[in-house]
Length: 90
Image 1 (cartoon, rainbow, N blue to C red):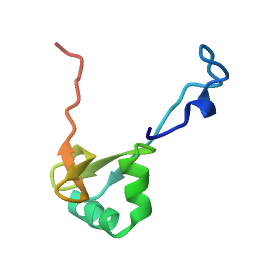
Image 2 (cartoon, helix red, strand yellow):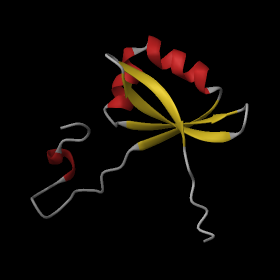
Image 3 (cartoon, rainbow, N blue to C red):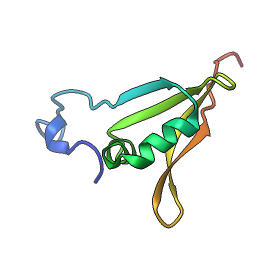
Image 4 (spheres, rainbow, N blue to C red):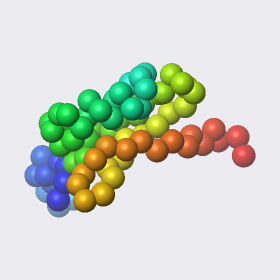
């Protein structure tokens, strides 16, 4: 199991101490720069790839949001994909 242990949020099978939440981090920087920093620091990989924190980058090149995802290519590595935002104006 990844993330918060059930004992840290549940007082019983039916009752919670609090609603489990994740920290969302938003960084305004090029995705490539953020990616290289994460690749060099194992603690950041642990925080993001085990879903303790969610990282969104706003790339200044196009001002679009990108979400960090884990890419499996023989080893775990950082990768960004464009975050689609639903404006609710259907």
